[in-house]
Image 1 (cartoon, chains in turn cyan, brown):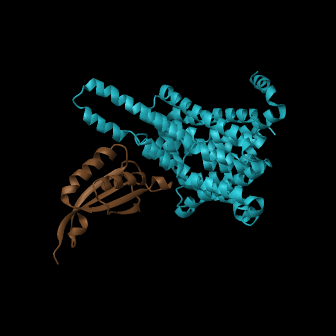
Image 2 (cartoon, each protein chain N blue to C red):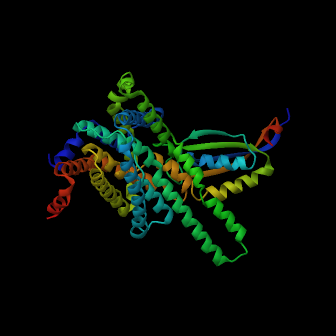
Image 3 (cartoon, rainbow over the protein chains, first blue to last red):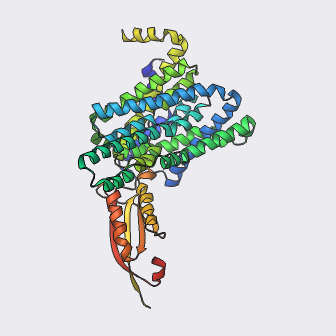
Amino acid sequence: MDILGLIQSNLLTPIVLFFIFGIIAARIKSDLKIPDAISEFLPIYLLAAIGLHGGIEMRNTGFEKMLVPMLAAIGLSLLFTLNHYQILRRLGKFNLFDSYALASTYGAVGAVTFSVGLSFLKNQGVTSEGFLAAVLAILEPVAFILAIFLTNMAVSKQMKTKKESLGEISESEIGMGITETKTNLKQVLHESITGKAIVILLGSIIIGYMIGEEGFESISIVFDELFTGAIVIFLIEMGIIAGQRLDDIKKVGVFLIAFSIIMPTFNGIIGVLVATAIGLSLGGAVMFGLLLASASFIAAPAVLRHAIPQAKPSLYITSALGITFPYNIIVLLPIMFMVSSIVHNEGSIDLLNYILKGLI
Amino acid sequence: MKLYNVKLLTVTCEILAQKNVIDILAKHHISGYTTYEVEGNGARGLRGQGLKNEKNVKVEVIMQEDKLQDVIEEIARTLFTNFAIVLYVGDVGVLRTEKFV
């Protein structure tokens, strides 16, 4: 199947259709809304299901296999976050705070995107490595921690230069300013690791590992068969929120719109290639790419609003939820699936040739 | 019954600033407060729709006048620039003034 065909058939899956439906409902100003309790419950449910599956599979495959992909994912996530920052700061002319906030939003992972990816693969009849759920959990705080650390460093440096230019007199005053502007990294670390997403994910991985296939049978009706249906309901809500934000997209500017499409594509394809090189399966490489391509829009505001309050949340939420998320699930997933199929069929050695052929 | 005059401080802010406000109160040894989730419209647009993290919250605190200035000064200095926040103060009467030291 060619890539347009794959995108087209992806468009006609219930997940994408309901997402678009949600956007339309918001645009016609319908009062349709998923009740608060349910839209708060669904991410927890999705993460629990992902974690259980991951845990069960890790019991089968063992831990050794996940070490290299885990380190590769952390390395790439950090690298991409720094890369985003440079692009946003230098080319996009965003201020320091917005640049770091956006850089980490795009360096972090989206759990909802991950769920959609799993169900996309299910639809294609492809499986992925279960330990990627653990990679999702580990990757979640990494980009934020880096960005917050670097923001603190930059703020201290600014304060220091200011202090030097002002002289000694007002030193105590500035000292006070520093402690207030700088965020306590330890506190942020604690908050993001004990955040509900990571706790439920890690907890479910451990439980999944303990119960195995047999124990899972008794709950599989909830955590397996209902999975795609639950995503569909959640995506109505995501569609509505994205739809309400469509007007804000104009405000984020052309640069950020381009950024939120080009960066995920770049990160995702690099992710697929790296994953293939370190030996992940066809589906595993797609999920690995998706981890790096996705932007965080549920965890990001909660972390960043405290850690980098100076950054404008309208920028990072709107671009991650309004542009990158729809692009990822509608267009980028099929593209990454295509790339992954090609590199898995031809073997990674021929990859360069293929790209060159494609360019010519 | 005799009513004693104390101050009611009301802070309406985005839900993610709630922790900051309560931390400031704690710093000034005020442990009692009431919060509730609210919706509304203001300088930062319609709030209360969509994501849970973008909702608004209202924090009500009763305190003696002598603490009030320090508390509102700190809230204004640390939170006004970066958060969606509105603050106002009113006079209220309470029966048991010892509860609000």
